[in-house]
Amino acid sequence: MEQYAIKGGIPLVGEVEIGGAKNAALAILAASVMTDETVLIENVPDVRDVKVLLQAMESIGAIVKKVDRHTYKINGSQINNLTIEDDYIKKIRASYYLLGALLGKYKKAAVALPGGCNIGSRPIDQHIKGFKGLGASVKIEHGLIVTSAEELVGNHIYMDVVTVGGTINVMMAAVMAKGQTTIENAAKEPHVVDLANFLNSMGANIKGAGTDVIRIKGVEKLHKTEYAVIPDQIEAGTFMMAAAITKGDVTIKNVIPKHLESITAKLIEIGCEIEESDDAVRVVSSKPLQHTQVKTLPYPGFPTDMQPQISVALALSQGTSIVTESIFENRFKYVDELTRMGADIKVEGNTAIITGVSGYTGASVSAPDLRAGAALVIAGLAAEGITVVDDIKYIERGYEDFHIKLKKLGAQIEKITAEKDFSKFRFQAV
Ligand code: EPZ
Image (cartoon, rainbow, N blue to C red; front, side, top):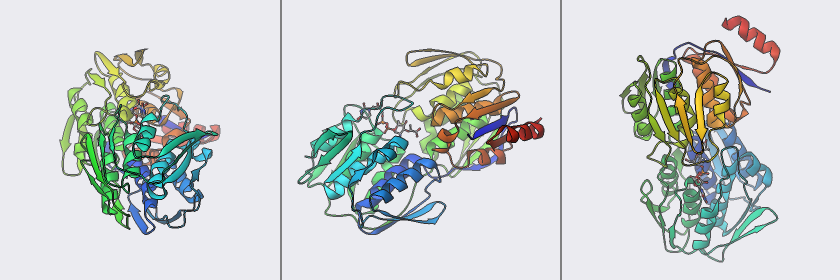
């Protein structure tokens, strides 16, 4: 099993390039099969979740051609199967974006019903409500969500909760529906906007993405396009937090600073200096970090996908911080692992009460999920001694070359696979 071995205590210094946004790429790749013409997509991150989605697309007959590490040509004209198997959904929930894409294009699709996952129970009732609102029938049969329609007709759809996946799936189903669809209480995340821009570049007529009311006028069909995925807000935020926690000075390049505002605001509050330019942010951490309050919220609020990383920073900040997780019920699983490194955190329901300590000490810990795994790595970068983070397959779902990028910033981190590698690392690192 692969692990990261980290010798902590070194301030990160230098520049890091952020890749394409995983969560935008997943939606855009799924939507790319909605035309029979060939679509070119650039700035696709080379991460495991993307690879699995591409395999799911190939399994139904889509032609996927890799042009280079970050560029794909997709052609959906040969799709011959409208059922996405359980295996793909088990590996990556976002395969369910193919439900909206295929329903929108072929008026029929079936995808294995996703269960809960490590971060929560994750219902999809709002996706189903949206499809039904467009006139589709939706049934659960033999573990599959089976949806079909004679024709899809635009409608007024009110989302009971703000859902990124629900907004994305319904938007895809509605682009070729007859007439106008209005999605109220829509998610405003950057990747929702990126998908809308992508679909519009294929000939869709979507207005209002990025606000809570999205208006979609159905078009007959979509055509080819060339499109580059936006930079990853969460990868950028993770490096910002790594700079803060290691007392570093890091310029994070190829970002959209506007997408990082909630993270930037919190870093300033806890005592970091931030310089913004058009497509970069520099984080300088030279003073002792201070406590604050954080509540995760849909965009433009503080992202749940950054909650573990900021908690790791707050656990080293002076005073008592309160972190409230309001999106997913199971996102404090890393706390027990962080406690093994010396953190003082008490979780009560959806709130973590964090009493700052003066430092972490290295320990062997396991990544419970993607973002929590990344958070434990940055804790290791600040810890005294050696930390080994297990189960890094989770981290590789969403971070491309994580340890390589950290190494370029001066971190002592290696990917190891066996005790032998570890002894070698320990020998080098001490
Ligand atoms: C997306 O998940 C992201 N995944 C998640 O990123 C992210 O944490 C989440 O949005 C919130 O920002 C992708 O984009 C592929 P939601 P999603 O639907 O779409 C409830 C990562 O680490 N809900 O916005 O599944 C739900 O239970 C991942 O990259 C319903 O009640 O999230 C949650 O409490 C993890 N009914 C809230 O809404 C529904 O039908 C928000 O979930 C749908 C959701």
